[in-house]
Length: 627
Image 1 (cartoon, rainbow, N blue to C red):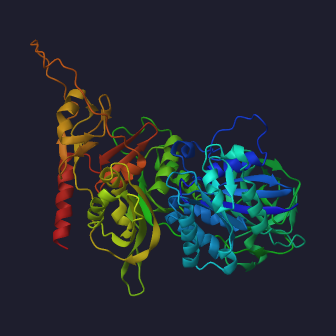
Image 2: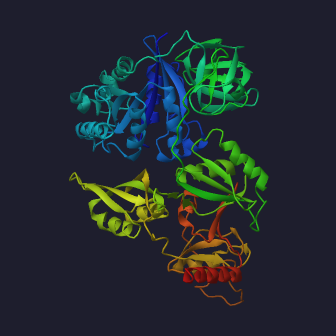
Image 3: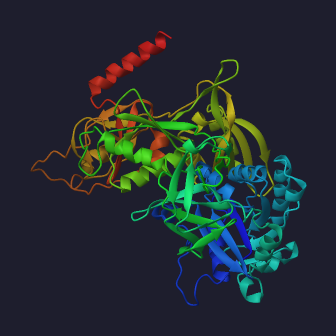
């Protein structure tokens, strides 16, 4: 049977998962009249809530007798590790680009990976039905990107498809775009036939040896309570059957390995991907993407081979993390009230278990027994891990993110820099430029197509982006678009501006009272509401001025037997600012922590007592004065 293995890559929100939905529908995966949710591959609750793909997924469709294995990948740069490891399973990529936004930072990142591996691209310019779509210009932008990334002549000849994933229509002709942009485009003869034909004609079959000894690289993992670990990957050579004896090779350099570096195992179950689900197989051949159960100790990047020939494949290279945080046991006065897993041992076991699937993550023990250093690609990468753990019943505390530095060739200190792309209305250009200056942002280029919006590209230290997203959204009144990705390591940029306002710190334990919050409303933005429990050292809101302020949020109104019309009016409060993990990671300073529990996310000071905080501040000032 003919096979095509293809990954779908795109920047976040460019319509990747919606296109997969339509491909599954038009290929007949769903039966007639079946009710199917939108973004059917986004099965994780966090993916459905946030509208983004976090984990790569496998599915397959059949088109004119050819089986097309589809791999849906995350679109956010923080989950680039997911993209990097599945690239080894495919022979081509479906590069999706928004017809209005054009190539964005994540587009550049994943395209570079795909082209360097020699994969064959098929370019889809999506959302041609947008009012501000500019497909002809985006076509040229993609070709410029290919040239910048040194694509081969064969890759530069990639077919271009113009599509509207939402409507399920596509065409190879730019002249068809006006008709495809109509609401009833699907009723006038348009469908995804052009896309399927481009995949079949431009993505090659897996060029593998089906007669040689079995060889397979593990690209991702799953787990079953009955079968244990399940390794997923593409069979590179030979065939495998249920019950076959196989050898699991240790990680290392590619080539033939001695028998002492191999573990014997037996294939208990073999699964293939059909539609959205898995089907049991008795036998699979080279080129198939399969899930293999029964091999204990299987890990991402390891090779499974036949005992006849112990030859290791090249492992999966993933770019290293750039920021880290400290995970520690929760020691606040509210510790243990909501969580099921609260000890250091339980948190450590969970974090090390995450390493089995999340290869872009790093976990290390520190000098302090109850603190673990966890490193990742970005704040979203780390916050998704935290949110998953809190939903599983874990309780812990997290420090402010810090960048991971390196030493240069001459002993100089290097730090990670990000490529920042902002798209803002013209009248807000000055405010954005003024804010990025103290954060050490360097303007690389600026494009103004004359449509009232300006796109700017900056090089900025990763430190300079801590806390910037919320400030950016305020400056642009929610109309700005911001994206960033890791660019390179460069010389230390010097001091960077941080949070300019102080916080309100609760001075005692109790329950927040509306009367107290009302008195504080003029001088702060509150993080808590009436009835919320508080403790000494917990952050209750943001001060309007620099410097922290200790406040009593539990103080009630003094009761007397005198009545006036004014004193009996109901207290009117603005809703408190919702604290999310992303906002909390951006917001806190070095002397603050995030308390994460299954029922709440709280901000607090490291030292809960006011006297301890003053002593710590004096020690910090003394350390600065002495150099």
